[in-house]
Amino acid sequence: MDEQTLHRKIEEYQIRSMKWKVKGGPSPYCGSEVGEYFYTDKALLTKLEDTERHNHIKLHFESLDPMSLLAAFPSLHIKKGFVLRAYPYYTLMGDDYLGGVGNVWAVPVSSSIPNPEECETIDLFELHRPFPIDNSCLDGLTMDGPVRLLRPPDALDNIMEAIEGDGTLDSYLSASIFAREIAEYGADCHGVIWSEHTILVGDPWTYTHNWSDECEPSKNTKEWKWLDHPPSDWRPSVVSSGEVITVNFYTYSPLLQETIYRYTDLYKIGSYKFEWDVKIIAEGPASLVF
Image (cartoon, rainbow, N blue to C red; front, side):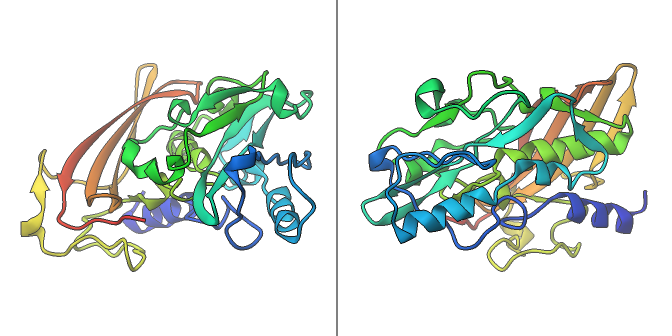
């Protein structure tokens, strides 16, 4: 695959920011002090008074459909008998919006939408997300106390257990990106981590990526500290060896401190659940803090 085609494919698959993850208007608001949870897939919105603000939230969240994100990856599909459902959590402290966390689970199609009392709750930091999480990134969400997320009683432990693909090498690269995008489906403000990562397809200082204004790497390479050897080839790679598929790719994120990461995902052929590892290979002088 030539570099231009690869770049286009990465841009197509790495759905950025609010395009698919949150549809329906401005950032929603919700008060954690009354324990408000949001259900999607035309489910009930619980513990909300009938106010204009809450009606806006209800309309906003009824537009969420995590299956639409999966549809953006043509080589992947959901296993028969399963569906993806989102249970995002947003919070206020007083009148200050703190942000929210994506919380998507794979559940049987036949399962009903549970009431909050029927659900297990898990701590924010127990949620499976295949990217590094510095707890300080999420400090803004926990200013008003610990965040407990709903887990439906019949949900799979790992969403990728419900994902199948066409078996091509491209499908495994797609799975690596999808797993990280779906982990932040509905995330906003202080709940965003992965959305600040840009997948690199070339040298970040000389190759033209579609940087947003606040996310372009510091250009003075002398200010960067290398913790490992710079890669000779920045492009994502997918290698099949025996029964193992290895996906490697690099990302840049300015969150807290400019960092370049190397991700390695290991798949067993025929399965889209993967083991992953990440290593910091370089740190820059600038930072992004919400």
